[in-house]
Image (cartoon, rainbow, N blue to C red; front, side, top):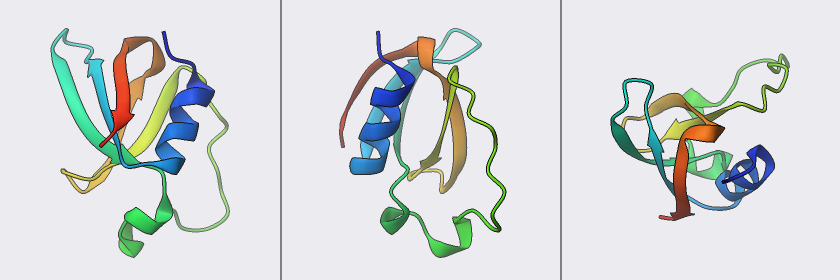
Length: 82
């Protein structure tokens, strides 16, 4: 099992391939990141407001769909550098 902190640290450091189980039970592979150098400027967070952390859900930028997505920590099957 992966921890919220381990996943977030990996996403900030690398472009990451995350495999997880969606709510509908299907498996999804997402290439994503939290490294702002890899996220287009028009998708950077605006303003100073930051959501309070929810350690059950990770929000990350999907590099293939060019948008923000989220997944449940307990649904993650694997993470690796992409």
